[in-house]
Length: 119
Image 1 (cartoon, rainbow, N blue to C red):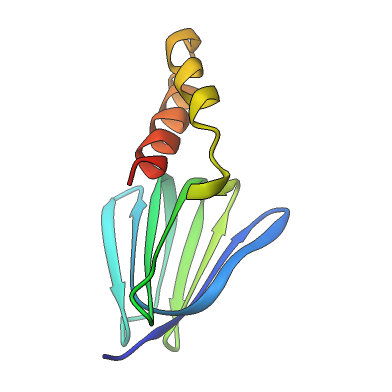
Image 2: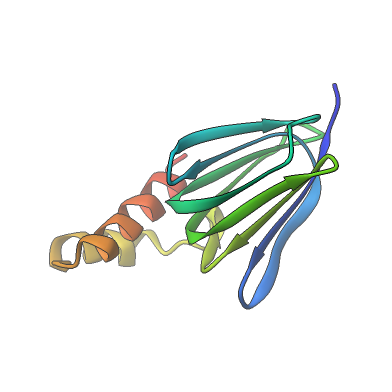
């Protein structure tokens, strides 16, 4: 199976880089799957999960809190405002924040964190 080079970057660090079979993420226009050979594009990211299936079949999951994605020359670059890998998410803290949160954006961020943590 063909692969595509993926770089998942946050404003403060390189989160994950490698070869992948598929990348699934959420743009402002909806969910998008990216395979090798995808046409060039640029899109804004919504608050949502990013799922990467690596070349070896491993699943990488991250909660992404805005940013944008580019695809060009068989390379996907995800520039996230904030990003947390599945194993970095504090489930107890995110769960507690759901019951005390009145800000819709922060509520959405914690819902995404829990969805990724439980994926």
